[in-house]
Amino acid sequence: MPKKTISLTLNEEQADSLQSSFGGGAKVLTDGQFETIFRLAVESWIDLFAGTKRYRSLTEQYLEWLDSLYTEVLTEEEPSERRLFSQCHFPYGQAQYLARILREQQMGTWRRKALQTLKQLLSDRLKEAKEWINDSRGDERMVFQMSKGCRVELYTIMDSLLEANTKGISPVRPEGTIGSFVALSLVASNVETVLNEVEKLLKGF
Image (cartoon, rainbow, N blue to C red; front, side, top):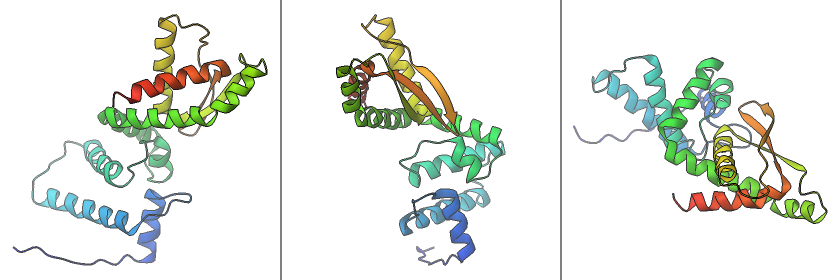
């Protein structure tokens, strides 16, 4: 059969529903993102009814669909239970599980993005950290809010520095949890050292 070109029109309720699930805050879905969501939806139905894919469980099906959405629509976002629970309406325990598996499946991609985000967080406060050091406040703690992926990278870096007996390194201290984000503190004198390690790791990706 020759290629078919069709156009689809969303009613207001459908557009609002997709915006609520895959947009959020000041982020508005583009026409291109709507088209991608349509394509993924049609492909999933064709795969199902043509018999080309059979899922062993709903969880397997959800993971594949979500993986496609994060790969093609939510490209700059790390999978998080916050979105899956509050915007996609999965039960919280299931949202936690799905987000963890998605991060593990695309470990290289999400590691790079987590490191890039961590680099930005530290770079944004590097000047402030240096001012604290100059004011004899280098041992005081600076609090950073970050994703769980960033937290994993930060702990890994700090463990490596401590194992290497790097001078002046103090352990990371957890300060709290805000939804799917965590608050951690570093002493000001460690900010530049950690930032340098992040930049070294990013060169490997």
